[in-house]
Length: 424
Image 1 (cartoon, one colour):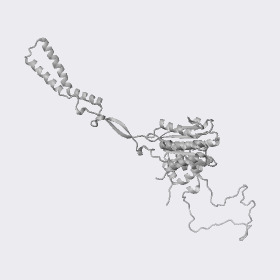
Image 2 (image 1 turned 90 degrees about the horizontal axis):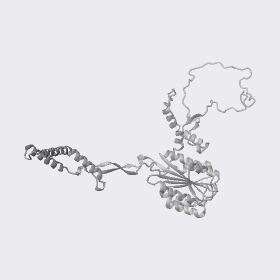
Image 3 (image 1 turned 60 degrees about the vertical axis):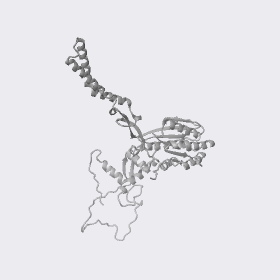
């Protein structure tokens, strides 16, 4: 198979199809390059683009050359120093005649630099998150949602008695009576005024014109009385239809232990994990809200600035954060309208009596309200009492996940493990 590459100069944005084909063709090499780039950059800068390189051997292209065909005769330069069979002494310095201190390459082929190009922010994020997916993400797209809400959609001419709209029906009946009997009503009014004038001037009631006028008035009144006040045609019923409920929104709760046992290095690791998770959620949902909860002996909802930079610290009572979490979810984020995700970071140190309380709160209160709960324990020692209790929660709840982070380098692998694609 021969690949032809079009290198003609193109206008602005006209090379986009070629770029897409290049990204598809070298997808594996680019993913490897992105993985290498992630290791060398801060998590806080993960949303920017990246300048990556691909070994030139992976992007080699076919070239055209001219071979020496036929029989060629040539004259080669000779020498006066060596004859056939002589051994040539090794040059001093172990290499050629160059004066450099380095050593020459072993390959006879000319070398080339690696192919370097710039990935945009969007392209970098696509490769970074390509094989990740939020577990239980069943309501992220409006096209696939199964939730509906009832919405008013005008009126209809049939329905149940409970949906009868009285005011709209009476208004329609009045309009019908005006439309049908309007002309007759105006003529009746004129005829009655004319009869009044005739009676005032003393016209004989037996006079033919008076008799005809009287008969016309009787006919008009009979006709108007024949118009029903309310006809079945006038009845209108409230019409309600079911429309898909926008469910592509989620709330992310970030729970951070700021007790005295959480040093600055552990807090920084937790911050990076939350930032990475937030960037992931912004790509999965159209609307996202983030709730930050810091806790030591007490829990408090704070803004992002205080969450990451407050210097407050103390003992550890994790149940205070879980109680506040449950209260906020019940008060502000109904399960029918919001996808609730929780990420908790701690060193696992907690009061012994409180860890059992945390387990009961999670099993009985928190887990029925959330889509997914991710717990990361930042420690390089033995499992703490909180970890042991949370293992019991993981056995009972499939949407509860827990992992350990020992060093900042573990953030990305742990993140991938927590949010890897689930089998269909």
